[in-house]
Image (cartoon, rainbow, N blue to C red; front, side, top):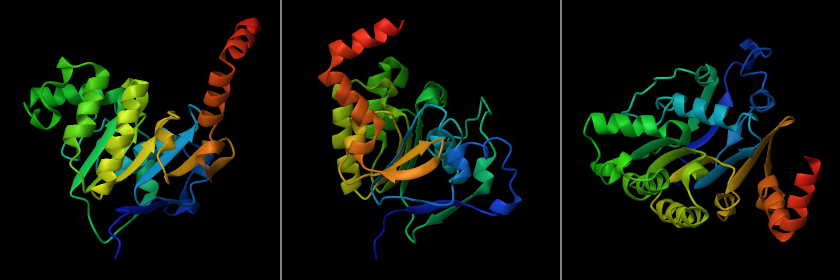
Length: 241
């Protein structure tokens, strides 16, 4: 029997009891959250800012026992307490096999997690003092040293600190960890990460959630168009000003 995906799907439980006029249920993607089925290796959430991808990823993380600021499930760090109650309405459908490793990387709060890990003097798994590196180097050390394989990993906009070269390195890290029986769910804007072969891509928009292929993503189409016509596109943008 196939071990992965560790988490097969997520769906709303008791949707008839929810207040669909309140946040976050009023977000079209949340409103359309009948069921999301995950790829055994890599599933991407894409869409404009505010489309709901990070909201749903955060809710999934909380439903799985992570804190809202991320880290392992042993790190219960909730200094901001800004999460919605969506996680209480989620039903996760899991495999018979549990992962041996867990991590939730949230780019915007990784600094807080790094500070906490330094305070409790638990930095060996991160390759030393996280604050002693650039943001991008810290992210890459996390991916290459902290994530051990046989794991379930949720990443929220990991590209925030990574250069294009580091993003290409991240593709190889994803491949290595997937070969080591890992599963990823990633919210991203990166056309480089989205190129990971055979990944499942869900597009979040004002009309809800639908599965699309890489070439259909706005990230691919806009980036390709801009790079092929960058002088013309820059001129058009500046003329609008």
